[in-house]
Every structure is written in structure tokens, then in C-alpha cells.
Length: 247
Length: 310
Ligand SMILES: Nc1ncnc2c1ncn2[C@@H]1O[C@H](COP(=O)(O)OP(=O)(O)O)[C@@H](O)[C@H]1O
Ligand SMILES: [Mg+2]
Image (cartoon, rainbow over all chains, first blue to last red; front, side, top):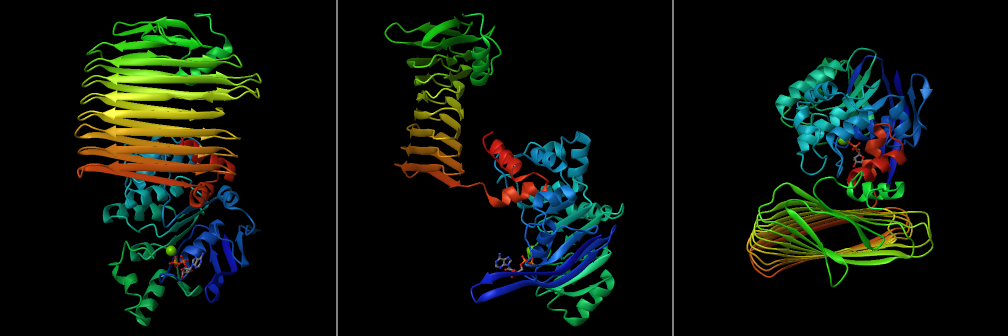
């Protein structure tokens, strides 16, 4: 089980301290998939990065299987079994898709593994393993490779920050399948998403609002509540017409 | 020596020319400690020593395809200064791979220096792939100095593809490359430089796009660590309808200094010239990305640099 306890994070703003996350408590159970959603700027990326150790909270603890891992570095957490896919993929001059998947897997993957892993994100290994992760790849391609790097690690905890952004509907279909397959075997997955289809397939839906947990529950119920409160403000959750926009 | 290479010679040869031994086929010339020590011609390539100064003339016959020329230089004696002139004449429509380069091993306290002046004369339609590696090894306090000069004269529709690599160990280098391009000629230069300690490396590129529709692309990637200093100066002049692009990326670490001044001069409205220069430390987000894959900070750094200099 992964637990966030009283997570608080604030930054120095122009007019004093600005609180980004304010007392967040969440439990992620073994074998469960949780979706975190909420308005742009509500703190979703910050929360995801706190799980990976990329951001250190001012207060609060991150607990994995009973161990306090708040003090562990990013590499240490990765080795403890946490994978992370960035909202904005990083480019590398001179490193190929193959190089990065090998680093992600911690050893040379077989051709079959590469094929499986890249086809889960809708890419053909033959066309991509030797491509440089630089400006020659489109945003959508980079995004899918970013997701593949997290998938190939087959970690106990996998965190994906808006994996659907910039992905075409055909690849998205496959991707939904890959996320559904993350469930089970006691694995924990956390997805930041605005996609109703991804939300409905999850076990739990969390709504963040202004750095606080506004609601947690079964996806159907939480979605129903969101609609009843404000159709206009949360319309994006229902319609999906904003799919592709980055928060 | 000629046929029996010792371990040090073998290692240098492997590092600068990817050769395990003296080549059995293709043309070659091995220069060691200021003297030509082994030479061989092939059906399409003739190498003749110069009579007026030190160096060789390399003639590649017109129409020759698929031949290679290896002309490595190795220096294993401390305190030697070697100046050599090599002239290449590439016949019409010939296609050839030329592997040059210099390895200096200096275990002594005196300076070892090699200045190789290479001139390439490409006839119409000829194509050259030129690979040049420079390395310095040895624990001596004497400097390892390399000053390669490359002059390229390209006739119409010829192509020159140059890979120049200097990955460590060279105390001081000044690399000067100039080129004049005729109609439709294509020049491609890729440079990789790594410096550390108190080393200095300076690169000058000067390219004249004289012939219509000629083009040049220069990609320079360098890494400077410790207190090393690098300078990159390039000037591309477009005198007609032509295309030129210079990309210069530098990663600096520790207290290193990198200076870059890419300059483009367009002297015709149809000259399309551009340059991009980016210098800085390793991007923090790249390090973090690799750390999320389980790499330590040191391993992440090493992987980024290795890829960048590939
Ligand atoms: N380092 C920072 N300095 C100042 N403000 C920040 C910083 N990081 C994030 N923020 C702000 O915190 C809020 C939450 O950001 P983020 O977690 O990226 O939101 P989300 O992913 O939900 O869109 C935003 O208003 C953002 O501008
Ligand atoms: Mg975000």
C-alpha cells in the first residue's frame, strides 16, 4: 500500500508563500488503480512528483508498504519499484528509444519485449528503436515513448501524468487497454487524467481542488457529483472535447 | 618495425583508425614518430611520398568505387614535433573512404606535437567520407598537442562527409577547417570534442558557398569538464543561392568555459543560412528522467554525455 499523509507543499510567490498542496491524505491500495483529476493548476502534477520524490513536500510523509520513503531520492524510489511518466516528455540528443528502454528495463530487452512494449503504446519497434529522442519525433510520439519507458519497468507503483495528452484516438484505444492491464498482481497505478474513459475503468477517482482533496470515491459516483455541482466548470470531464489539452 | 607492431602501437592504431593490424587490403600509410614506416597502394589509390617536404600525395583514380585509404599517425616518443603535408586528389566520380587521425602517447616530460595539414581536391561528382580521430594518452607531464588543418576544395556536384572526433587526452588543439564549394557540392561536417583538466581546444570552420545550390551542414557537439576551455568559431559565407546550417551544442561541467561564435554572412538574397548555438550544463530534467528509471546521478550524467558525444 502507498500512503500520503498530511502532504503540504508551498512555494515562495511574489506576494508571500503560495500553498500548492494543503494537507493531502490519500491511500492507494494494492491492485488498485486511482485516477487523480481536477482543474488546471489544482496540484495534480505536484502530487504525482511528490510520490516519485522529484518534489519534496514541506510537511507530511510518503509511506510505501509501511516504510517512510519521504527521505529517499528519486533513484532510490525508482529502485524501490516506483515508475513515473512525465506530463511533458524530456528530449535527449544522441540517445535512442532503444537506449532509453534498455536503461528503463535495467538491461538489454529482447526484441519481443521491445515489440510488446512499444505496440502497447501504438508504435512499431522496428521503426522506432534506433530513432533519437530529439526534435525529430513528434510530441505524440515522444509522449508514447515516455509511457513505454514506465510500462517496461513493470513496477509495483506506476504513476502517469496525463498520459492521454497529445495521443490520437487510435493509439488511445490501445493505451486504455494497457492501463487496464496494469491492474491486478497487486500493482498500484496512479494516473492523472481528464479522460472519462480512463476514469470509468479505474477503481477510485480523486478530485483535487486548490491543492486539497475535494472528493474521493467510486468513479461513477464522483463523476455524477461533479456534473450535478457544475456542468460548465467541469464540462471537460464529461465531454472529452478538451482531450489533448495540457493542464 | 613495419609488420610487427608492439602493444602500445596496436592500441593507438585501434583507437585512431579502428585497425587491429596494418590493413591487408586498400591503400594505407602509417606514420610513426615523424617518419613513414609502412605504405601500400591499391588498384585505385596511389600514395607517393613528397620530395620537397614531409608528407604524401594520395591520388584516387577517376571512377573508383568502394575503396578505402587509411593514413594513421602515431607518436610514442616524448619531445617530438612533427609537421606533415598530405594532399588528396580525388578523381571524377570516385567514391572513397579515408580514415586519418593521430594518436599521441606521451609518457615523458617533453611536449609531443603533431601538425597535420591536409588538402582535399575533389573533382566533379566525387564523394569522400573522411573520418579523423585524435586522441592523447600516457601519464607523462609533457603536453600532447595536435593542430590539424583541413582544406577542402570541392568541384561541382562533389560531396564531402567529415567526421572529426577528439575524445580526451589532448592538452591543446587548434583545429582549422576551410572549404570552398562549387555548384551543387555538399559538405557535411560532424565534430565531437571532449576536454578535461586544463586542456584547451579551439575549432575554426570557414566555409565559402560559391557554387549555385551548394550546401553545408556543420554539427558540433562538445563537452568541457574540469577547468578546460573550448572555443568554437565558424563562418559560413553564402555568395549565391545556397544553403548553410551550423549547429553548435556544448555541455559544460565543473569550472569549464565554452565560447561559441557562429557567424553567417549572406551575400545573395537566395542564400539561406542559419546557425544555432546552445551552451549550458546538463539539463536538470534529463538527469531527473534517468533517475526515475533507477540510474544514480553519476550514471545518468555518464549516459547523457556518452549519447551526446556519440
Ligand atoms: N515551482 C513552482 N513555483 C511556483 N508555482 C508553482 C511551482 N510549481 C507549481 N506551481 C503552481 O502550482 C499550481 C499547481 O501546479 P501543478 O501541480 O502543475 O498543477 P496541475 O498539474 O494540476 O495543472 C499551479 O498554479 C502552478 O502554477
Ligand atoms: Mg499537470
